[in-house]
Image (tube, rainbow, N blue to C red; front, side, top):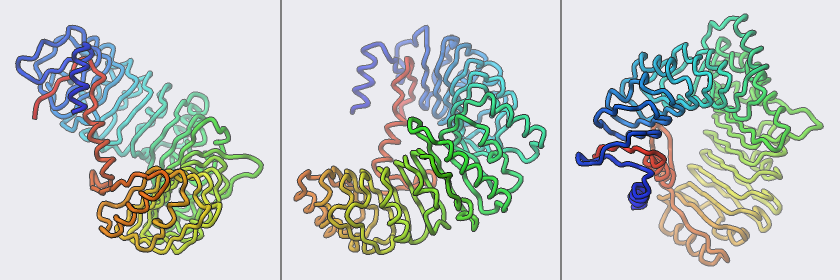
Amino acid sequence: MMLEFVIRKSMSDNFLTLCNQPSAPPLPSKIRRLTLHHATPREVNDLSLVRSLTVSGETHPSILDFSKYELMRVLDLEEYDHQLLDSHLKLVCSNLLLLRYLSLGAAVTALPRNIKKLQFLETLDVRRTNIEILPTQVMELPFLLHLFGKFKLKQDVGAHRMSKLQAWLSANSKLETVAGFVVDSNKSQGFAQLMDHMKHLIKVKIWYDSCADASSTSTLSKAIKGFIERSTNFMTSHALSLNLSGERSQDLLNFSLGTGKSYYLCSLKLQGGNIFSLPPFVTMLAGLNKLCLSVTHQLSRDIIAALSEMRSLKQLKLTATQLDKHIIGQGAFRILEDLWITVEVMTALDIEDGALPCLKSLRLLCKNLDGFSGTSAIKYFKRLKEIALHREVGGDTKQKWKEAARKHPRCPKILQYRLRLANGKAFSYAAYWLMAIHQHDQLSCEAYLVKTP
């Protein structure tokens, strides 16, 4: 209903033209932002002024004739899953020389070498593609700020080419986001060798594969340490995400940081099956606000105890099969505002008065909460605003939480989460709605072409 209202309001203000009926009014003569959502419209004659193009689903073949566009700044084909020929990509790289943003979908398997012609490109998003190898020419785009995907560098880069690329990155790179790269063998450690030369890098995501050898592990470990030690400015939000697999996962993170400085890594995500203890560098991070720790085994009490003493932690997400028995005592998690626990089995976890004094949001995604003393402990959380429970939690348990919430001075909301599988990932019910809203949010356009389902 709200979507319909916003569309109608936008039409009345001449901000948007909606074409989903045969009797729809003709398109404006000057189109600057064009969005096609499962549409096969009549051919549009003049596309020379289009600055932004978003295509989702089917479209008229004339739309993909990129030789017609002269002023394109934004090209979003992330939701376009139909066949996108190599000739289309070559036209993009040869004609759209003013392009700032490029997003590609699942039909793409490789990037052409002439992508180096996009000298003004700032964001390249190929997360939904099947691209595995990243051409080194992409790294040399002078204005590139954000790079999204899951890449490897080709194995035969060569020492001379690597040395030349390192020198160029040291002098010219503006890259801030690389999310991310795969390190799985000695031949694919190229990105780890380049990280130290990206002086403006503030967000990194890395997949560390089980077949990586000792050389790759050592090189990557030094690169990660160097990235963290460069996060000495509290004004920049450095973020690191590591998805680890294999026996050497613990060795990769077994390093300490230099003393005498404060390190302001703002966000850290660690995911892996072989993380049995908290890496030593984590407790040395003075500015760590957000930590996501995901393991496939029981999370030890030593890890929980170490985390409870971190003074800057505001958001904590723990995912495991179960938590070890532990008592969260007075003064623990002093400024934590958001606690998210996802486990298969909730064991005895007791919270004493004076713990979690700043907690505002508590999410407990476990079907059985009998081992958690939360209903008696939430009275200690003076700032609590919301409690999220698993949708399949028992009726008696749900009623206890509702009763405890009613007695709380702030009467926090009780939310229920249902996990669904989408593209191989688990999403909460709320997140699923947000995804749906985002996919339909095509209102920042002057021509909106829709085929009614």
